[in-house]
Every structure is written in C-alpha cells, then in structure tokens.
Length: 516
Image 1: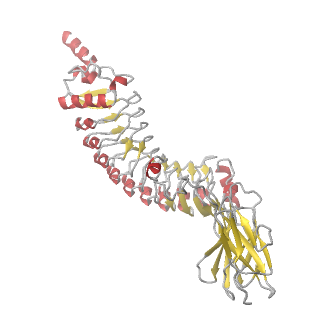
Image 2: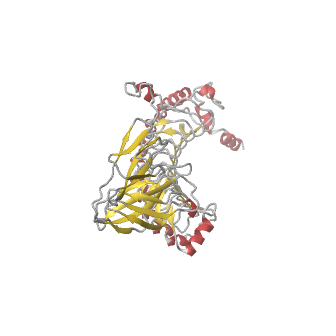
Image 3: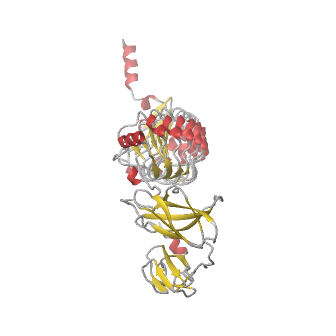
C-alpha cells in the first residue's frame, strides 16, 4: 500500500520538478534568451526571475523531457528585444519553438537551423526583419513554419523546398521580394500555402501544381507576380480556395482552371488578364455564391449560359462592367496620303479613367505601331498619322484603363477586329508641329498652310497649351492643292522642381536616404 502511494505522488509531480537538472549549455541558452528578449518585461515570467539552478523545467513556457528542454512556448507574452542565437545550443531533440504574437525585432538567427529535431517553428506576428535564413531548410522534421506578419525582406530561400514534412507554411504579410522558388513544389504534404501580401515578382512556378495535398488554400495575392497563370494549377483538384488577385498577371485564363472541382473561392481580380473567360468555368460546381471575383481585368464572354453562371457566382454579381474591353464598330472615316481618321463606339458608362490607343500595321507585316491615344473613354475618334502614301494598312484600336484604387495596374484590352485602308498618292506632304517654351508651351506648324483646325477647337497657326497630364494634340491643315493632312504631338506637363535650383546642383544623398 505504501509503495502504491509513493508512485501516485511521483506521477502528480510536474514534469519539470521530476526531471533532473538540464545541461549547463541549455540553461545558459535560456538565460541568454531571457535577457535578449527583455524577460523582466514579460507578462508571465514565473520561475525565470529567480533562475534557481535545477528549476529550469518549471519556468513558464519551458517544457522538458528526460532532463532536456523539448519545447519553449512563450507566445503572446509581451516578448520584446531580439531572439538570441543561443537558442541554437538547445538539444538537437528540441521540437517546438512558439514565439508568435509578441513584439520581437531583429533577425531570425541562422543558428535555429541547428535544432534538427524541431517540428514547429512559429515566429509570426512580431517585428522580425532581415532575410529568412536558408539554414531553416536543414530542419528536415519541421511540420509547421510560420513567419507571417513580420517585416522580413529578401527572397524566399529555395532550401525551404527541402522541408518535405511541412504541413503548414505561412510567409505572408512581409516584404519578401524575388521569385517564388520552384522547389516549393516539393512540399507535397502542404494543405495550404500562404505567400500573400509581399512584393514577390516573376512568374508563378508551374511546379506548384505538384502540391498534391494542397486541399485548402493557395494564396499568392497582393504581390507583383507577372506572366500567365500556369495551366498546371488545374491539377490541384482538391483545392478549396485559390487567390491570385492583386498581381500583374496577364494573358488568358487557362481552361484547365475549370478542372478545380473542389474550389469554392476563386479570386483573379485586379490583374491584367484578357481574352474570353473559358466555358470550362461552368464545371466549377463547388463555387459558392459570391465566391468568384473576375473584376478589373480585360475579360469578356459572349456565351449566354456562361455569363449567367458567372453572374450567379461573382461577388456583387456584376463582373462585365468592370472589364477593359475593346470598343465596338471601328470605322475608317477618311484616308489621305499620310493620315487615316478612325472612329468607334464609346461605352455608355466608364467607371475608371483611361482611353483608347490607335495602331497601324502595313498589311501583312504583323508589326503594329502605336499612333497615339485619347485621354478619355468618351472620345471616339483619333487620327493615325505618319503613314506612307499608296500603302495598304491594317488599323485597330484597344481600350486602356489607368491604375486606380481597385487595380494598381495599367490594363489594356485586346485589339478590335482590324480595318484595312489604302492611303492615297496625291503628293501631299506630312505636316509637322514644333513645340517651344518651358511651359506653357507654344505649338506651331513648321510651315504655313491655308487653314488650321486644332483638336482644341482653335483655327490659328499656333496655340498655347499647359496640360496637367500627358496629352495628345493634333491639327488638320488644308492647302489650295486640296491636300488635307493631320499632324499629332504628345505634350507632357511641367513637373515642379524638387529643389529650388531645379535639381541641377542639389546633393540628393541625404534626401534619398530619408525617404521611407
């Protein structure tokens, strides 16, 4: 009976008390960490303040097994200061370091890569800066890596692709730059991947389509990713949420996206995507109402059933009105030796600022040249100038939308169907405009003509302009020889000088370094 009681009492003693004193190197590592992270200011510092030898396993947040520190859990405990590199001296069997939701600053010590037994490393929601140490790629047993919501910079180390046991990777809400490493496609155990709200560039690696267990969320939104959407993402048939919005993605949507049979939320808005929405989208049977966002691109569709499906799933129901699409009914109004006047239908409603750009191509060449653009979506006519006499041209127009609060990208539509026109050969010369002055500017023809008709409505040989933004001006001239031609010129506004000396002799070193 007495022996039984002793066993019960020992079982009730906390693990830290029952364990023997931890190794000196581990004790020293904990004490160094305590002071580096401003231990006296912690919300709970029980046991740490006295630091009595042999009691280390009873200190708040310290967990031991067999006389060694196995876990340090101090999340949401008002830790400040920095993470001491001394933590790298803890046991190679150390398995959890949980320091999230504090106010730690400084770098992530590369010495954490020595903790080869680590399974959970959560440092999210701090103020950590610097780069992600590639040494973290040595933690082959790591199951969870959370570095989100910090101020980390630099690129994502490709060595993280070695962490084949990862079931959680959160690098979102930092200031990471560079490409997404294709090696992340090796993380076949991941159910979710969060890389959103960084400054990542380059294309989306098609290798991400190899993440066979990605069954919850892939979030690459709010970066600067460019290029097309990889068709390989259609392999993620168990994925429930795909967020690619607020990037610089272009090209058409691959029809393979329609293979995402489990996707409930699909956000592709605020990019530069163009072309027809694939009819394969109608296979996205798991999409919830308001689970789709295609807005603020250059997408379109003429398929009635598809449009109805998209309207049912699209957030706020409307997606077509926010697209940048080519205008209708392009017409060649008149053709001279060197000028072709174009007109087109303007949309009834234009929510965002932009205009139309005109293009010409010698028929059959396939090489298109911009002839200028309007500064408003309400302008439905523009001259293409500088053409060669007696030549056949293909002429086309596209719509553009300037960056705005809902999309920071310049978005261009596809070309309109082209119209062909052949210029005349009546020996009419190309008029030329000369710009003088330092702003306001004087625009005048380099030669005299019988009449002048400026885009501003003036009929004089010269005009004075002071545009507030880049603006095209044109003038149509006539001569007694029945020549009627047009000249165009792009005029930029005068920007204010940063220094009083016009920035000619100012030393910008101190000024540049003070920019946030």
